[in-house]
Length: 81
Image (cartoon, rainbow, N blue to C red; front, top):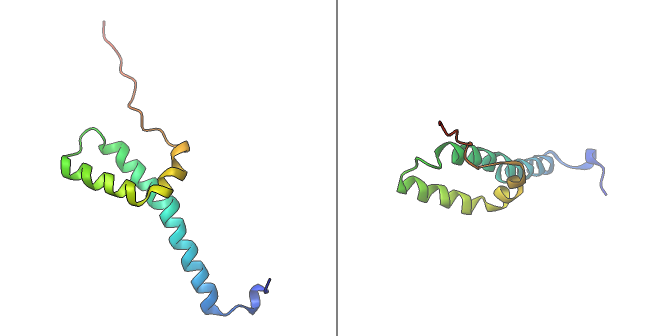
């Protein structure tokens, strides 16, 4: 394995860019999408729902990685009586 100091600046920049894009695709954007879905799930219009489903399809690997840690169930209702 080559020493890190022997790599050129362009190679290190390329590796950092790939890691940044992968992190955004797998962690950052799906987390934001989960928060958005939780806020708008029951009040979204049909066009907004279509866009939400498209985003879930596009970011599916990240959504799958984040899903064990998030809960989209509605809040428990209280019954007056």
